Length: 502
Image (cartoon, rainbow, N blue to C red):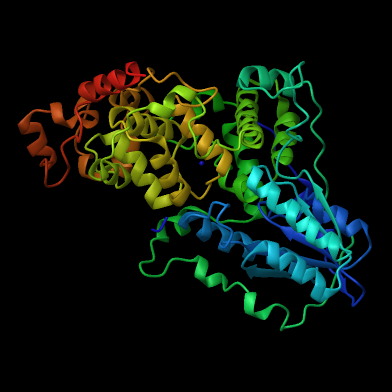
């Protein structure tokens, strides 16, 4: 690859959709443009609502911008997911007699050009968070203004405007607990129902034809590595709400414990739907509140949504988050450069079973259990002493839930380099983590099947197993399974020596 016992929810997405069919129609009146980005959904979409409220017919557009070097390009797994998300949104719009125009190129060029060629009256979008993204939006708004076209941005990808939560001194929070306390004193807006009446502007076949996105190019072909992704996920808005309903019904109540059990599905698995905007954080927030925010599982899950919000908030106020260690002393950290060790980690061939299980789950499914993410992240940055940015880049390419803010924030947390992070000296012992959070070895056996006949402690530390036990289990080091690429004690000692050198 060129390359996260509750009541049932009945969201407005389900309750209103069937009532809206056949209400849409097409007209040739002057249009307004809805520019979709990380918000590929129909319900709780403030930009779509604002555009619809004008009474003008709509043009719905998505631009894949690979030409602006200031923006991080989508990874391989995210492109695969995008293909399904665009298809789902197009199907939804089609049910209301509309369509989705998809383009590829510089958004700074294409959005004003689309407005000009269609004589659009305005363009509507959601705010983005990174400084470079905001600068691009400002440039596009300026170009539109010169054409006499209005533009309007709404907050639609976060719970609150990041400028809304401030310290008493008017500064931004750098510690989650303080941020979370202040955040909870704010009122999160109620999710919006889908627009009840829609009309769409007809699109000529030759409209920006040279910039049309061939969406099949988002899918891998030679080789087609996405079989596991297809077997695991179905992108789209309806599927997102079904995941949320299932979580509320089956796993929310015991989320506090279930989120750490690697051998079972105790998490919500909503992260890729949130990353692509198939469901909004406000919809998830409201659903949990309705379930009962004082329930222990719901309360913990809300704090996880809060951590996601804190990551977005930090990206807004600290645009260096994806690229620079925010803990200043880590600018001089003596990271190791070892392509061999990095490749072994990426391929799940480190010789440490729980680490390999997590990395193989990632490669196969485009997702990794949250506890496993912490284990493999600690192993890379501490036992192997490899720069967290190497891990962040690999995750950004291979995760279907890849997200600028959350990915970087979580890597800086586990590496100990962030503004509010786990201390560097907190170094996970991967085998103890495996024993604690996969006690029956189900997770390891699923993703590292060559070890499935081992039992007890041998499954977690095969290098300490007796020769006869290894032979009986069909395990031969260097042939069926690698020896550890680092001695865990020596790796820990090396990491602590590097940390003390600062």
